[in-house]
Image 1 (cartoon, one colour):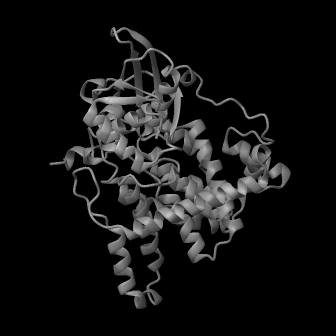
Image 2 (cartoon, rainbow, N blue to C red; image 1 turned 180 degrees about the horizontal axis):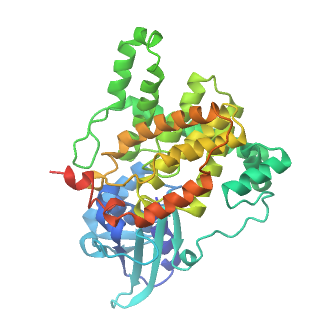
Image 3 (cartoon, rainbow, N blue to C red; image 1 turned 90 degrees about the horizontal axis):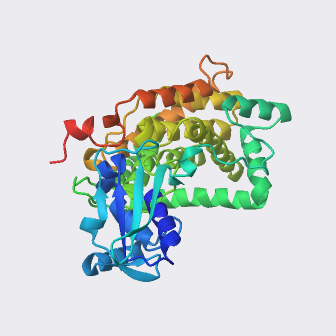
Length: 433
């Protein structure tokens, strides 16, 4: 998502210049795992003018095939330029730029081979991008329309207590200030519908996932197995776990296959929140209001991680992806089940505390092993964290702010081979061969 949007932004910037050729240089994590993540495909499609929001899989596939067979790329969808993938996508290996490991530099050349424009973007996680100017100021410009400005969980809890609001109500006030409450509700309902649709699509598919690891889709098979022993569910006190695992697997199999998912907070961790949200909906007789509270609360927690640490596996390891998704889901579930703000904050803290140090080590650079199963485990952990928090009074020794700071420091101390490079962990101890 990030590299595609960066490519589209660069193409739009240079489309009116006398560009004859564009070169893309991928650094560090994007270079080392980019083929497995489809980064090469993403930048080509982005240079054609597609963005993550406008992406049409079928149209993109046809366009990509035409470019690779004909050697011409329609820059920003307007006019063709020469594009030779083997020469114009440069895989820089372990070379890393200073600000973030997910970096890519675009250079536009004229017909004489002179460089016209060069620009670097950083893909900072969850589809968010920053160009070389923006990356120098990591904090976004303050939204002066939002009535509640918070930079920490401490601020969030104090503001909510001051005005007698739940975390979800505070977030609704902020979002409604920009969009209006009805539009916020519509968008939240659309997110839920997209998550539900992704689960259902994942449950209907079979066969192998692309990429060469020959990983078989399991969600449909597991669903059939659950249905075959439906009568056992009455006596099995943990039957709900099977469904939560199933739903998380279904979403991440869709992600691995290039299907439509909700980035929450990243693609690699996209199965956790949908699985836990469906658990709430199906096993706790969920309501529209409860689902919205879940998503608003999860969004507040995700924003704290993004602002004060990272949601990028390339920057802090999988604790920043599955760990953050687990923390968001735990907070959302606690809120939907009627927890106090203190209990919600405690749930988020518990979930991350027990994901600290989680490495990102995808085999072959593909978001398949161990990523798909890791989402199932993260979803179960989120539910347990919420339940543990809800039987307490919200008082605890380690605050969410402290655990976020710890996660950031742990990520900084983590060797780069464990941060989405496929140079360590399972990626080398169980090599793709």
